[in-house]
Amino acid sequence: MNFIVFKNRFLSLACFTTNQVYATYPEFNRNNLVQWVSKGYLIRLRQGYYTFPEYKGSTDFALYFANIIYKPSYISLQTALSFYGIIPEAVPEITSVTTLKTKAFSNDVGEYSYKNIKPDLMFGYLLRETEGGRRIMFATPEKALADLLYLYPFYNTERELEELRLDESYMENDFDTDRLMEFSSRFRSKALSKRIEKLRKVHNI
Image 1 (cartoon, rainbow, N blue to C red):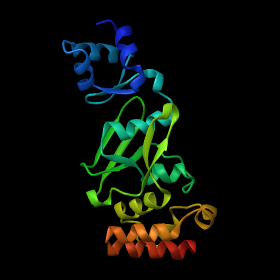
Image 2: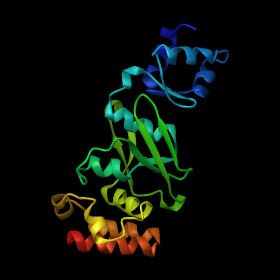
Image 3: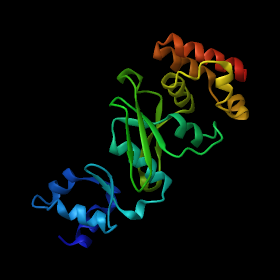
């Protein structure tokens, strides 16, 4: 198959699947995808999911792909906290939570990791609009922090919570403590509640 014709058909999708390819071209030869990836015409995001090199290097599309290649999921944990400026360091991988199994993917766009949570904890995210009008499921600051403290139980003492180095100005002026407490109650976890109380003490919130 001619790659230019193929590209003109799928480029606007940003991320496409083999199922979409076969729905459009029922006689499509899968070996074309293998060859186009090897030549650098396509990027394989994970089994059955592809994008074009034109989208490589775009932070928005890297985040968008996180939602698409393993769903349901939303961006949370360190990536969300870094995005909001709550933690100081850049995060080398894009972190999400999902109701599926804990998983990780590595591709030419980036590193992706997903932590499992129960279905009733899939809340506390917004649809953030990106370039091209696409939307990304993205945790609020309060849910990202609640997810982190729930999924990483070693943040269990005031000293360990201090080592998160949460931005004091953000915590004082922009962080919604009432929302954090509301989210915490929905987890129904005594251990999480204790960690959050210690966090409030550390940051006086």
